Length: 437
Image (cartoon, rainbow, N blue to C red):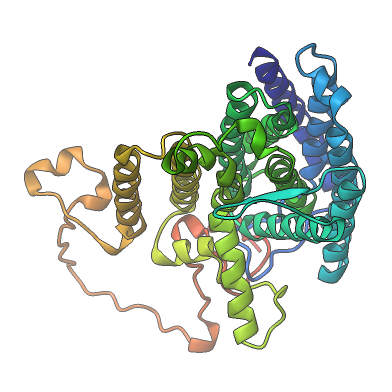
């Protein structure tokens, strides 16, 4: 565990320290696109944050290769090299897209090629443990198609959810933490060496996200761009592929004892089929809803709009920070709830806790719909928003100046100007009142 913590710290430190220079590089090269209708930030913000994250990945792999307890991962498996090859290709395409805005089909082809590069080097799904059927051995063609599909879906799911400051990095960090605990338990709990690469991938992914988050929290100083979102999506998919189709279920000795005991013991094997999907359940749901919504309107599935889950939270009335925290909450609840159930599937307390936390999450979602007012004796100790408004009687009613409807400027929705809904000037007029034009 100390080696993993060291790898985590080095990856986070390299990513954090390089993000500042990368921001200056992005500004110097003009990687600051104009504000789009679907964006929620109000000022042009540099992208290319994926450059720092990629070098953090390289630093993490380099450090792990020189640690005694983690060096065996590189000696016994070719998966770290396969991951680095696929990550370098998808990162390069992402950097070009952040600068030159590549076509969506070009990026889709690059995602498929990156997955193919990993498949060629051995990072692929070899078999699937299916409940009620057992272990199903896949043909090379089936394994390749399934691997490419999982990589493409995960990359686009993470890319779709990257719409608020700190949202994608935080959600992927939560997912990586849950995945790390699961893979670590398989490696040391069941002494399965095949789970070691996934354990390393997830701890490096955590370091990349933690190192980038301080620069990306609201208000963000830099965005990860497609170079970062596609990169962390590919690493998350590679972890799922490694632990789903590489771990031999027979090594867990699950087919011993009664049928009921074997069913409960088999959960650690069957959970990998669900854990990658539950970890990215919210991004995947957002992806599916976006495809259905755009197809229903006759648009391309890759056409951008303002109908994502985080946009809807802002429209309900949540502030930028609260919307991000709510998405964090649901991601952690789904990921760690599934993880806890895989460890103690017979415990009813886990189910009750998940249900209770889900109820709390629903209350948080609907919070802007309620405007509770504190009693007058408690107004001095509650936030101003919960205090009763005092009626102010004006001495003279001053009529509002008449404004032509055509000259009326739309006000951005959401708190603190968090949502931009129409055309507006890129830079606000900062001149003080009374200064000459």
